[in-house]
Image (cartoon, rainbow, N blue to C red; front, top):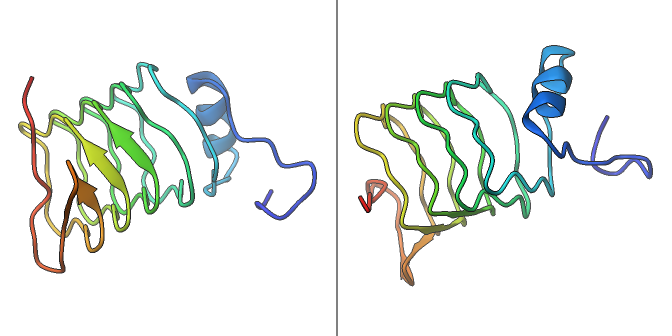
Length: 130
């Protein structure tokens, strides 16, 4: 399934996302998984690019290697102890996220905003612990 298909519907639950991911789907634009417990989930190489929402999502301990959150809304999300190696947050709106213990090697943040501050190439992903 790809975004331009008329019948495309983004996953609406953890179970549906895991089922579709296990079936080989990797592109999930316009997904809203706000408030869900996604702790420990494996979504390596997933692509949520373009307007997905992850407000208050719990990704603690998740494997998100090379996952794209490009142009997504990532607010108050918990990435504690997650593997974000090579993840892409370019042009994302990032606020109040937890990243303690997370693997952040190679994370891309160019053009992302964090509390209104634009991040540039080479900047590190900021963390806000609440």
